[in-house]
Length: 104
Image (cartoon, rainbow, N blue to C red; front, side, top):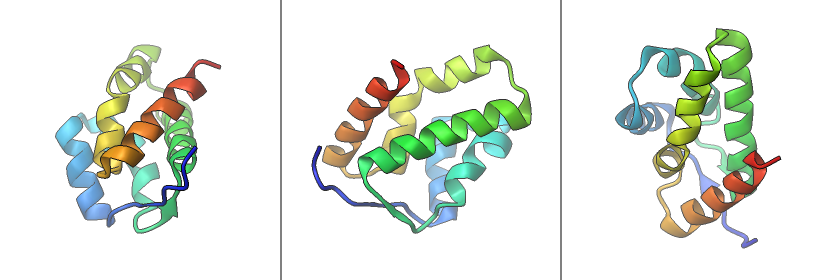
């Protein structure tokens, strides 16, 4: 694992990027807010993976969405990572770690 530090963008920019992936109302109101709370914060790729997993868990519990909706989020995970992590190298590392984390 490299020592990449990722600084998340401001909440408005982050929301715009996430909505470019999907502007589904369930995601905008239930999934994206977890990321938006971390605007301007710095994380390494593993921290982004932890944040993604936290967002999934909270989205499922709070919104009581169906497993099918969660599956759709997993299907777009690479696009969500690209929206959050503009640096290609850091995004690639984050995606690799996310795949490993989701295998367990």
